[in-house]
Length: 166
Ligand code: MG
Image (cartoon, rainbow, N blue to C red; front, side, top):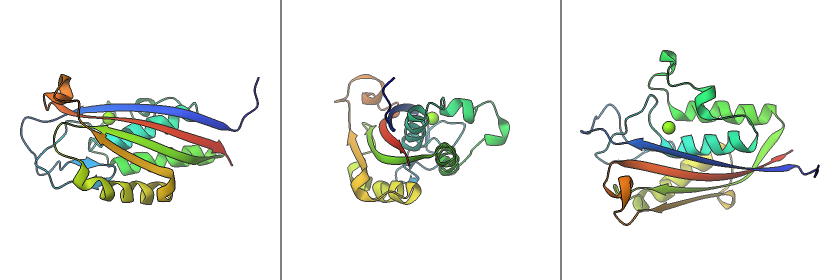
């Protein structure tokens, strides 16, 4: 077996827009509240960026997935702030002796336009993970109007994370 102290993980998540904007469920992405008239249907706050990040980190640490740790059948978790989920995942990583090397995220949305909020979302990610800007990247893309994202049905997110034993 190759003895190496770094591990890579991938995460993907998608949430569907609700038919109408619910002011009680504002659009949360990367732990940042966007001032946009969209709400995502979710057991939690629907933060696809943080969910993809959590799954990438859990994947890298071989700790399963977000659904195992935070089942959407658990009524105690209804409406949970995804920042709390991330905090738990970061604790699990720390317990396993891991630190994050870097994370790279691609958010996929036809609407709303994410580029105006990119820096705010990045700042939020750095704050939540304790990483500096040189270790966190956030990209935003559309699907050129193709598929469910292109039909403005929801938002998806991909994340790759590298972690290492510290
Ligand atoms: Mg999710």
